Image (cartoon, rainbow, N blue to C red):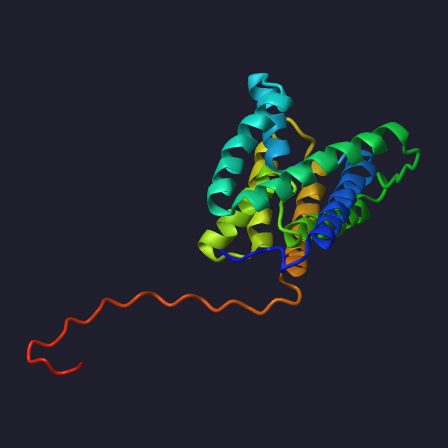
Length: 223
């Protein structure tokens, strides 16, 4: 599988990962949360589990993340998982600090299309930077990356498909208006992730199908 840290040295890699994580925390708190946009991915599934089954999101997100992290450890290696843990821990710290100390309110409830556009651009850029640094911002991003590499689909496209499915299920308990604008944000984010992760990289050629080996001729001649 392709290495997603672009051969960056450790200080630069950490700077890229933490910058992307800070951007994600800023966007989720100041734009998504403050303007009541919903969530896709594992967070959306966790909220659905709370609504339908009464399972705490703190438990369900852990149950969703652990198997994906084990798979990532096998297929992507320890460095990728460590980078992901750094991103997840930093996100918790950054979001908690903003929630507690930030007095900045970005009120776009009268202009939800703009809120969705900003959310999509900023979350796409943030998640893309974390991926470029050799990690992921959560279990759902890891799953998107693995599916992308296994199936040869752009990572942003997988991100969009997974989140749209979760958001469609979330209509059971979420308002339709906010859910539809969140879908808009997810679609924008998917394209930005694809742009951020592919910018400056050569396009990969599709691997040709393996041809069956021809049997050697019995007369000793070379085929």
